[in-house]
Amino acid sequence: MRKIITILLVITMVLMILGCAEEPSDFEKASECISQFMRNTYTIRDHTAIATLILDDDRRFIDEGVDYLIADYEKRIKPYATQNAIDEFRASNLFLLVIHTASRRGVDIDVINVSLDQFELDEDKIFTDYETTFVLTFEDGPSEEIVKKGKMQLNKIDGVWKINHEKSNSRPIVIRAARR
Image 1 (cartoon, rainbow, N blue to C red):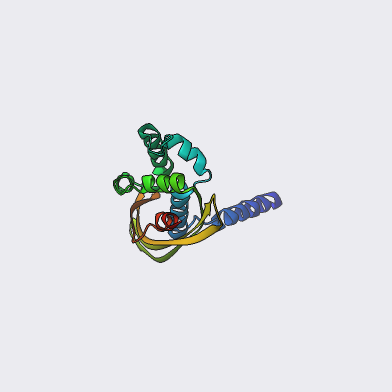
Image 2: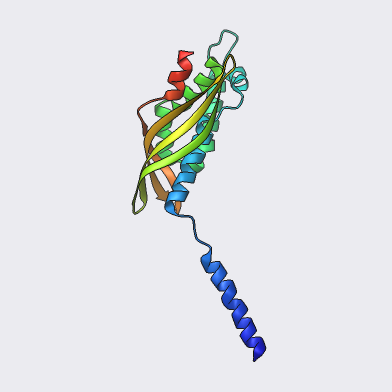
């Protein structure tokens, strides 16, 4: 009888421990999705490698290199964005702007912080404001920290949160880098 009580106590404790492990909240999942998207979209660690791939000796774009990098961008963000969002980013030249800024302005880009505000959950959609902090490191001078603000809509697709729409009033990386 004592063995049965001990076994039941052990089983109860295991079930209690397993029950305490919580699934991440929708906010945490959305935050992680947006953070990974921003890092995969904007991080450029070696602008010279990009310049070598997409610029000829006269600093004009090489179409094959640009196409390769855009396809690579799309592959990197696919886990975090719907096809609708990818099509929007392609149409707005987001990927090309990041590539152009890094290669022609001689800048490496790092995402150092992503925060969400005004988080609203509506069944299988999330609406949120975001703020992303970047560090631009210029090859000919000091680094500069900038902030990009915008709004995002995420949709839950097959149990996974993905960015479906993004709106930003500015392209601070391109604007700041162009001033140098």
